Image (cartoon, rainbow, N blue to C red):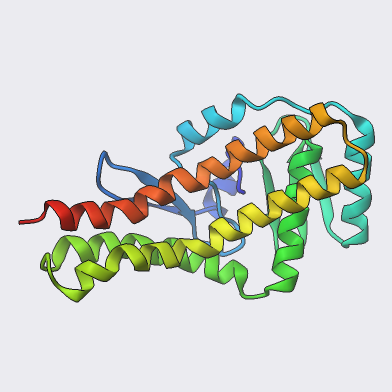
Length: 222
């Protein structure tokens, strides 16, 4: 998951993104140019609103356990006091940027590091998918209703976004497993599941639209 931190002018220049119109109400997704620098793909304001409703797990013990795991994985951690309630994992530099009192988020980002190590092509598949999926909408829009392209477009979009959703889901599963290992309470686990679930929604909701739009275009096309 990527972040919505207020950045300096220098950072804004380094994180160049693109906005892609996906139709049906103008669903905007944000995809950064750097393969390792993806962000949640709901429009920024909506995504930030979803994540602001998450509550912190204020337990230094869990945060220390997460930092210990980061050390074991040889992942650097940058904890920032004023940071959006999401995390960043930069695969190239093996760096996690996370807010204070966010052990579940830190474990989640460390889950990405494990995923990327096991599947080294995953970062490219993620960003490549975000670039390819919107093309399915374009293909559906310009092709004839009963053409092979129009019929295949929704499936192509689903295949393109699958790596991102799989990575996000497994990273969260790893986070919950790690929290259980360090004896997080039932209340803390419940809160972690809610927070990570909301984070997953910032990917799943717009991506579902990316699959649905080509199908809807074909359905209502004359």
